[in-house]
Image (cartoon, rainbow, N blue to C red):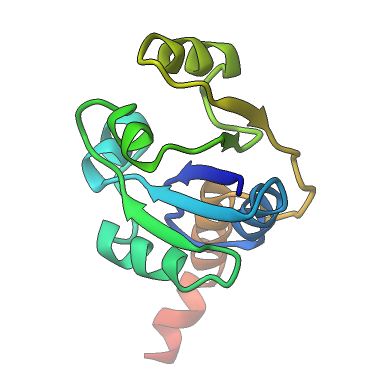
Length: 149
């Protein structure tokens, strides 16, 4: 049995996330997903839109996901040691180098293959793109909304 691990923020769930997770699932028999904690999101990206427990609940409910866990804030490889995946699937835009992860895990006695997955071409393939579109829509329609009140 091949266990695949995927990680991410999953702040505003969108089709790009679904395609990433399905592509990861197709690499093996079991997909385990690690959802970043709020403090990790703040440190690495931005203030999260949705809280970590809500993001974990949404990801857990997806049919391609066998199990989902909340990450930890300290050692990012600690969760990998507890899950023991055969493959780690990275999204096309995740800021990690495959060899760096493989080498760090090898130092811990783990042989894990790290794979970079494809980019999918949807127009709103990204949380920041969705947020921008909402802001643009609100800015254009703000006067209309105020007049209706």
